[in-house]
Image (cartoon, rainbow, N blue to C red):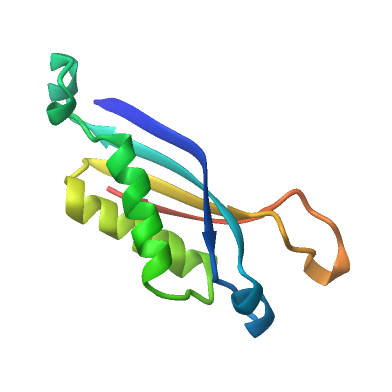
Length: 116
């Protein structure tokens, strides 16, 4: 099994639990771990998952609708990637920096979804 990773892919979106978050929008960071078959050892792009197309998929899912929860956004991204590319496994973490839970600063908050 081969692992392909995309780390901290930045995509602007209008997601959040509050109307203010959805109206203003913010940058979300996507950390994606894909398990692909050993066919990728052929050294041919068509035998693996093209991370350019993965990034395009993330942007399409983010632009398609507004999500209230990071969990739902991460799941939608994971499901779209599995459907389009047939990966053996996937882990999607969606992070956002522009948040202060209970008024306390944090580096980021996140939700992670895994699919076999």
